[in-house]
Length: 248
Image (cartoon, rainbow, N blue to C red; front, side, top):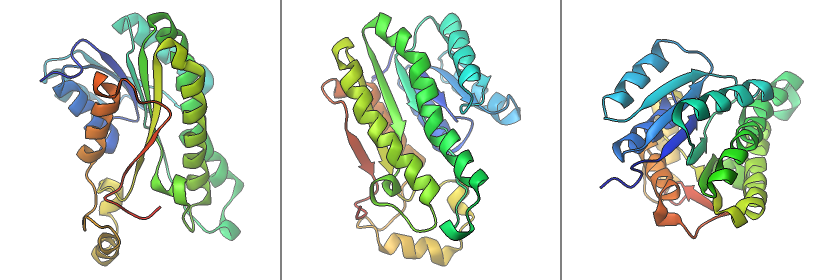
């Protein structure tokens, strides 16, 4: 079943973790993949090879998602190489957690730039392409902490809450051209980053989740398949929590 056959997706921050899982699931559904990360390194090259092995066209691009000019250039390069972009997944993100009283201006600015400004940058750059096609799906990676907030993450929570407001606004702006925009709010997802947490911390998290487990990158990727395909053709401006039923 090739839900995305013939489509091209642009996925930011996709050399590893959730972004890579999305790229792999999209490719398994017949989607060509353009993906970005900060550097064209061994990690990106390996991801590129794995995606091509799934029988689709795939290419990685070095790009600073927080830089407006850089984003304009990379999207132009991708458009020239692939000829169209049907799905944009704004996945690039970082954390610089800390209590407000100890948080520096640099910590605040960096998280807002990478997590929130990057969504503006790529959506702005992709709009003319999707507008011309009169079709497209934009998927923005928010978080449950963007819905409910979280102590010691005011910068991250603010960036992810901003993504939700941006998503709902863009859905209203671009809907008349059959361009949909939705957000996903993952909960506790088991990635390389969360693997560093002590086992007792992860167990405490699991106790708060009705499904009694952390999510996997594939859980998020499966939701992206739904939002990127025609299965969700009448869904826009929504936030889908992929969180195992965590209270938000």
